Every structure is written in structure tokens, then in C-alpha cells.
Length: 99
Image (tube, rainbow, N blue to C red; front, side):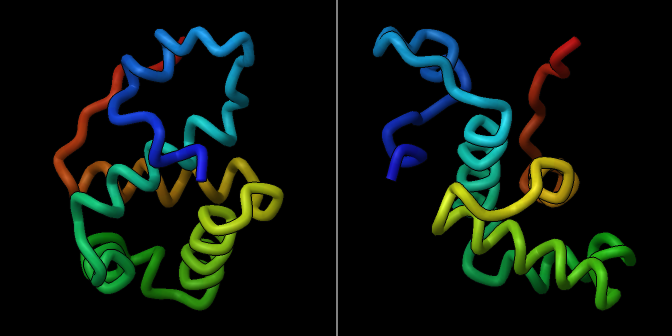
């Protein structure tokens, strides 16, 4: 899995493999880091911290992102972003916004 190769966002920006990671790939790497920080009960933590994720639509978002994490071809970038940012907030991870 490509996500385990990068330990930090600096590794992403300093990658010299000749390929540029897509926004989706970068979000999935951030998601993996936040998920690992929060732990195996990340879905429960997320649904307790954010009321949106305690709805059917929110559960669908979490499922979609978990599937995208396993198979990068799946998942929509907007869903991945919403889940990733919320999970990073719980994990206490602060990322510099991309302008």
C-alpha cells in the first residue's frame, strides 16, 4: 500500500520518485495517519464527536472512506476530505491548509 510508505506530509512533498500524488492519494495518506492515531474505534470516536457521522449519510461517508483506504480507486474525494478533516481534529493533527 502506497500510504504506509510516507510517514509525514513532509515526506509527501519531498518525494522524488518522479510521480506526483493526487489530492485523493494525499488525503488517503492523511486519513491513514489520523485513523492510526485515533485507533481501531475511529468510527465510534468520530460519530460521538461529530453529529453528522451519527447519521445514515455520515455512516455511508465513513464506509466509503474505509473502502477507499483499502482500494484507492474507490471513494469520492469530497467524502474522503470530510472524514479526514474530522478525524484529524479528533486526533489533534493540524495540517497547513493548501491555498
